Length: 290
Length: 290
Image 1 (cartoon, rainbow over the protein chains, first blue to last red):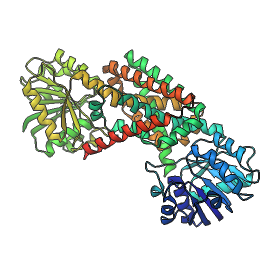
Image 2 (cartoon, rainbow over the protein chains, first blue to last red; image 1 turned 135 degrees about the horizontal axis):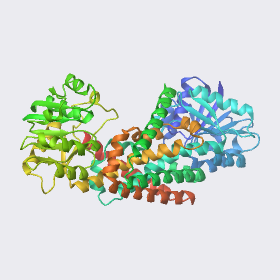
Image 3 (cartoon, chains in turn green, cyan; image 1 turned 90 degrees about the horizontal axis):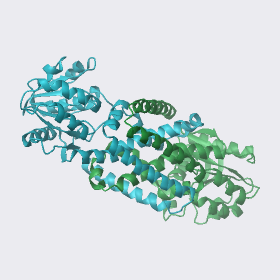
Image 4 (cartoon, rainbow over the protein chains, first blue to last red; image 1 turned 180 degrees about the vertical axis):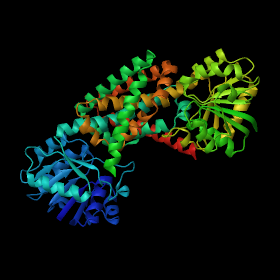
């Protein structure tokens, strides 16, 4: 059981962590801090936190575990700001979508008396904000942890305990490895979706064509409805991996384009291969989610 | 009320048309033909057709309205095969995803005593086959009709009656206009999805990365699970429009790639624009679907 846990950033993820800590009675006290107007009050009302703070220093002071659940763009300043107030021995973790950059900042700004363990829960919802928080958001989901050679084993154990409380499954990865993998299965799909909306909606007949768009367009463009600031920060902090995967994607599209132009009948085989890969992935995903 | 309607091809669409005709008591007799083993029997069992035929000639003979609901790749031979058996005055329509090519074939092979009206209902399901048929599949959906200068007005009226029976909304378009618009909102999203699965799954770390893939990857790749033969035929019969839209898409991705590589903070504005466009589209789509 944790003594005092502080959650900084009470959105969907931060709020859900608070609810899960309470549901499992895993912390004596959950403290919360959020810059948004009234967010702390709403988080307390739904039972995500016990105590809210208007001072970041007061919020993190005395905490055994500090969870940074803000957008990755806020992380640099946040790490600088909490550094002087952290209690020696404290463990700090985050939930940001990119890891290498955040870890560099943590190593730069945090005192050597505290430990940082990078984390990234592979979950989400279309809705955001503390109102959408759900204690079961992490259930059976993969939770990436990216300790480095410098991370203390005791700190890793503590964050593993948190992951267990959330009902998620730990997966250890090197930070750079993590960033490359999520670039392919998460950041690339987002940009593919953005480019689809961009290309289709800038066509001369969009106002007519949009009326013909149905379920296929809806699914393929859904990610474009995601939070623009969050994805901007992801692009800024994972530029190299994302660029690599965009290149791979463009190459794949250029090959398809040549074959469509050439009326290549064997496109059917390529589509069947992709269908099988997709079905295999979906089966594994469904099994993991059970 | 129709006297005798023949549906050729009893998959999801053909079967659903049959169910809707029965539900609205809109035809004295619905005849069916399908090459698949046992498909006609299953269609009759669920009430999609009244009478099944093992001979295509017998199936279409005497029909006032013939609905071709096969994949577009089968359409050329089908039009040749039914031509000698059609009753003078009959109206033939299809439900294929591309229109210009099918209309060229219809004008080439059908006798002048019958009329052809190209059609394309904007609906679908993840499931296929007559077992997935649903009388309400077309409810409030857009149903494109693409008559040409040569199409008889009486034939258009007859197909409009069918669309009304299905509960769908007629939208008239030039065949080439239709093909360009669906290329942007339907065929491009499919190829974007195929390329995503192709690029991601050929990465060296796919077996690990695939475990991190979650809801975003699921949505963006869903179309890749679609019928490979159907989409191959779509590419073969709509090559020019699809190539155009792939070029637009690749251009959009190349621009994004440059900006990600340059750590361009104004990417957030582009993402916000796409988010708004997507939200506007979704609102219209939801309103239409009510």
